Length: 385
Ligand code: SF4
Ligand code: SF4
Image (cartoon, rainbow, N blue to C red):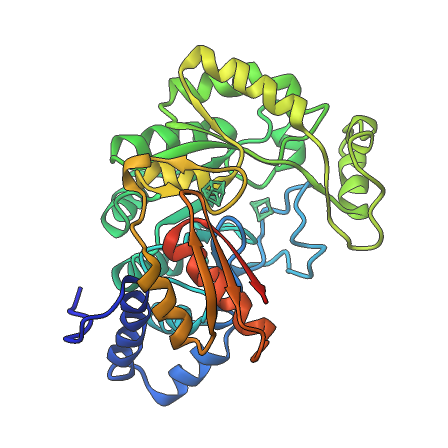
């Protein structure tokens, strides 16, 4: 870490200035071509999702799980490493106007499997450098059987990394995810990750009604036996082709479709309702003393012993870790963004801001809202007079 500034600066501008310093340092290391590539890359523009900024370690995935939505998004069934080097990626993220160092959650593995042989090195380099330069609290989701080498390197890269090990089914894995490592190997990976002091969570996502719900007792029992720190659950997103693929594998799709608000059109993705199944997970998990998280960011906050109240599912994590951001910090940041605050009302879980309506700029407001939410880890509402 380096000293950010000699000038006395508020807590939010300090974080912004830190990103600028990272870019300045990297400009001495990267070529002009690399910098141009990083600036044009979607990582420099993407808005963080609720789980954080998604970081793509590769393009496509060769596991071709029957319930996977990435193929409807146009990703290929053959994986290739992402085009940026790890330092180019860091530059790209530092350039991203929505990202706050130390605060924005980073999520690896949302549209690919990070630790396939073709992308494993790149994924590890990304996790090392993103944390080393920007300190983003990170999570990775995987179906790989974590071994000693991966666990040791991950622990060194990001000591509090939230590792989500995906298990949807044990009995039907041969049919629904035939190319992925066997579930039992993944459970062993949980134990290895735990042995290295990482924070592995059993990632029961997607929950497939008529498949996963019938196996919950066994899945959770094994999760506890292999030392999972908790459970993260998530719904199934259906598309027309996912329904067809599941049907062709012998899955009864009626209980799935019964839970969909409507049928998806073309490549549209629709999440199905699983609240009752999640309640069942919570009930079983209680017997094993395992915490259940309904969102991946909750596990990220848990593994980092952090605090967050950015949405209505919160507050999450450790109350003692609340961020101390005051009126002057927020007002200084808004001025830096050339936005004129009329009122700033800071409450324990949210911040209400009213701006003078003489320079309305929706994109700027969107950036300010995201930066302030992450910096304060509170919900932020901005309106004009
Ligand atoms: S491993 Fe993940 S990304 Fe790859 S096909 Fe399966 S669900 Fe999709
Ligand atoms: S409050 Fe909890 S659920 Fe909401 S964004 Fe923060 S960690 Fe996630």
